[in-house]
Length: 239
Image 1 (cartoon, rainbow, N blue to C red):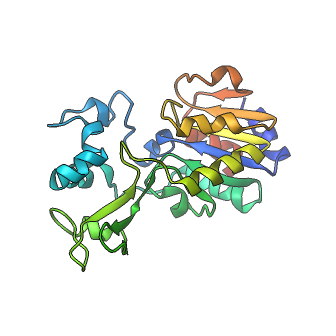
Image 2: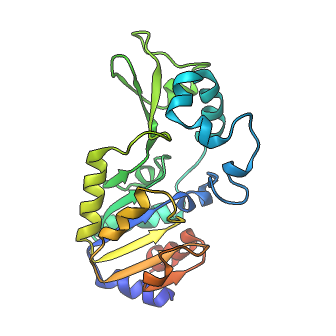
């Protein structure tokens, strides 16, 4: 399988990577839906409720308690998967990373063309005046972070009940539809509408790197169940 993947990568210069939480678990960021993920831990409210738009508006301080504690991981560093994908882009083979993650690790590894479907914890903005802030606006404040104008600062992440950014959708779908190889990694493909984007792929090879089975398995040309960092290290960085 590894040799087959190496050959697919070697023969292509139009690869798109579509990834989810499993890409970042090797960096110490928990996966929401795994057995030990956030959905299986106990809080006063379910994570889906806390991370909703209406909860953010109604109980902003409570939202930020959870958000600072569970959604921000300042110690996380890119792993071999992130580094390998940045290397493929540098080689001119990878045209885009389409990610459901909000941790910014792809950019930290050196990737330039990254479409963040669910936004990023690294960006925050004032709901009143629109001024943008970095991560420190949240991490270095307590309670509800406030703008200099007095407005509430909100993370630039897509909460439940909110729609995805139209421009990001458009660019992601275009990249996927033009690719000749689609590598899907670290995602259950259960989160919509994002997971539906892979339906736009019209190329020749689909590679699936995921520890567990997905609804897309029967359409993949190669399936590898090993950790994604291990696979990409061996197929890209060790080549």
